[in-house]
Amino acid sequence: MATNITWHPNLTYDERKQLRNQDGCTIWLTGLSASGKSTIACALEQKLLNKKLSAYRLDGDNIRFGLNKDLGFTEEDRNENIRRISEVSRLFADACTISISSFISPYKADRNRARELHKEAGLKFIEVFVDVPLDIAEKRDPKGLYKKAREGIIKEFTGISAPYEAPESPELHLKTHLKSVEECADDIYNYLVKELIIPA
Ligand code: ADP
Image (tube, protein in one colour):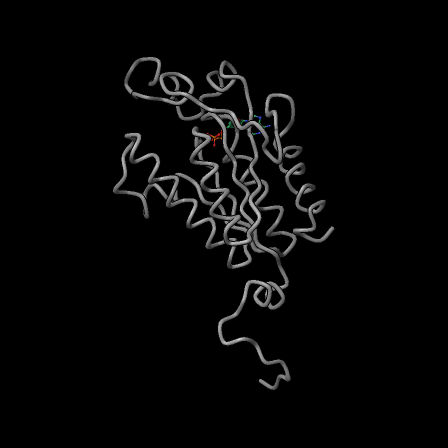
């Protein structure tokens, strides 16, 4: 292939961005179980892929059963779970993909570490608080997890028997009891446009 461009032997992020014609970033969805993280992540991923942008979802289904299948739900394992997810998400972002990570991630310190990791690598990190009152999340209960938590079958369940530390200054705050799935996905999409991460 003839080319008059000489690329650096180890491509830099900016060179990758130019060749891929796309910026990468991590969109970190945090919130209670059943707040709507996975549903919004799916809607957003489809919207981005339809615009021919590269996007990929990381969630419990593809992480807990693979990379992190050796981890349980002790505090140490939960921390390690989020640490590994943060690293993987950073790699996707560094590969100029829009990485959509949806995990309860209840602790501020863990989310801040994920943010720092991206900052150190010069990558954008967008924290999205997927917010819903606990009683509504509990009524939705699509997987029956709240019921099991109330019955004591699931121990240390976020919102019931384990804390959820709400973000103080997320880039976006979505109230999923007040907006539709499409409106929530659009809010994130429009934020990416506003921040010049994706074209208008
Ligand atoms: P999570 O991934 O946070 O555990 P899910 O996306 O699996 O939550 O489930 C959320 C449930 O709430 C789904 O049944 C979804 O259809 C419903 N829902 C209602 N309104 C919204 C909304 N605005 N955004 C996201 N989900 C919503």
